[in-house]
Image 1 (cartoon, one colour):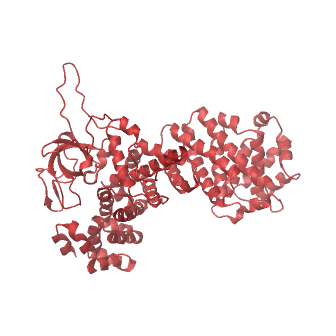
Image 2: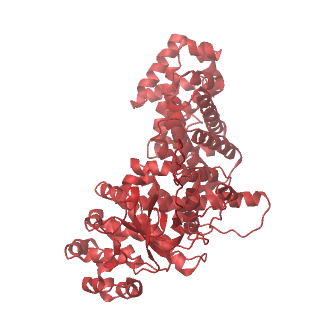
Image 3: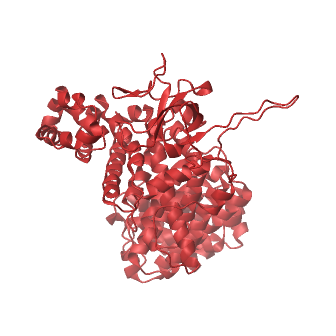
Length: 614
C-alpha cells in the first residue's frame, strides 16, 4: 500500500481507489482493535492510514479516531495528529458554494470527526503537548472559532429577523453585514476582489490562516498576513480547484512559509535555499499590495498594515461564510465539538491569546447566550462553559462578561419563577451554575459597583430557591436533584468568597437572606423528623453537603454583635420567626454535630454563639 500511495502523484484522482482498496480497508479495520493496533504501528500500517487521512478520506479518519481512543500516544508517535489537523484545515478549501450539498454533508462529517480526534488528543496528558506545539493547531483553532462565529451570527440574525416579523428562509451561512461593509473603503481592493487580475511577479498580501499558508505559532498572535510575490497561478495536484496562488515570501515574511515551492514532490516554483519561503492560498485569501509612495520631507510614510480596523474583518467574514455552509438548521453537533476543542485548547496560553483577540467571536457568543430560546440551550451552555474557562486567566476586569453573567442570573431567575417545563428548568439551572462560576472567578477584579450588582442578583436567586423549596409542597423537596445541589453550592461558595467585603454587608446581610439561610440549613441538615427535609444523602457528588458546609460557614462568620446590630433584630428572634416549630433549628444543629462530618465544627460554633447571645 505504501508503494502504491507514493508512486501516484495525482492523489486527487486516485485517492478514492487507494482508500477503497482491500489493503486500506484491512489496515483501517486493524486500527479498531487494541490487539492489532500495536502491531499495526510497528509495521508502518498506522502511518499509511495517516497518509490517507491527510487527504480527507473519511474511512481513514474514522480509523485514526478509533486508534486515538485506544492508544493516543500511538497516534502521535506516527504524526497522525498532524495529518488530522491538515485534513481539518483543508476542509475549508473543498466546501461547495451550494448549501447543504452532498459534498458539504460529507465534509461536515470529516470536519466533526477531525475536531473530535484533536480534542481527545489535547485532553490526554501524554499527547496534549505534541498537539498544542503543532503548527497546524492554530489553524484548527481558527476553524473552530469560524464555525462558532458563523453559527452565532446566523442565530443572532435569525432572532432579529423574527423580531421584525421577517419570513425569509433560514440559511445558516452568514452574509456580510452592513457594518462590515461600511468599515472598509469600497474603492480599495479587497481579498479575492474580482477587480484584481493577478500576474506572476505581482506583490501581494496573503491571509496566512488559509489552508496552505497557516501562520506559525510564533507569529499567529501578532499578525495573520504575510507578504510576497506571485510565483504560481492555477491548479495544483495536492488539492482541487483552479484558483490556487503560489507565493514566494519577501521582506519581513521571509522564512514564515510552509514549503520551498514544492508540495508532495511536485515543484511549482523555486524559493532558492530557503525551504520555508513558499505558501499556497486560494484566490479569495490573496490581495494585491499597492506600492507605497516615497515619504515626503519630515513626514513618516504610512505602511499599510492589515488590522482588525481595516481589511481583516472581511477576511474573517469570508472564513465564517465558508464554514457556515457546513452548518445545519437545528443541529448543533458541529458547533458542540468545536466548543469542546476550543475549551481544551484554552488552557494553552498562545491559543487562549489568539481566541481572546478574536473579539467578534466573543461578542457573537454573548449575543446568542442572551437570546431567550429553549432550543438553543445546549449551544448556550457550551458557549457559557467556554467563556467561564477564559475568566480563569483574566488579569483585569472584562465589563462585557460581568454584564453577561449578571444578565444570565437575573433573567434565568425569572424563568425559574414561572416555568414548569422540566427540560427547560434543567438547562436553566445548568446555565445559572456556569454564570455563577464565572462571577466567582472574576469577583476579585470587580469594582465596588460591580460587586454590589453581582451580589444582589445572586442573593435574589438564593432567596427564591431556598424559600420555594421550604414553603412548597413536600413533593417539590423530594424532586430536588443534584443540579439543584450544584446551584446552591455555586451560590454559597460565591457568598463565602465575598465574606468580609463591604459589598457583602450591604447586599447579603439582610433579614430576608439570613431567614433563607436558616431555612436551607434546616432542609439539608438530614433530620428526618422534619417535614422540610431534603434527602441529600441520596445524591452522589457531594454538592448538597458542600452547600450545607458553606451555609453554616456564612451563618457562623456573621454571628457577631455588629452583624446583629446591622440586621436590627436578634438572631434568637430571627430564628424563632423562621423555624416551623420551636427549637427545630437547634435540633438540626445538634444532629449535624452528632454526624461528626466536616460541618460538625461549624454547627458547634453556631450553637455556642447562640448561647452567648442569649
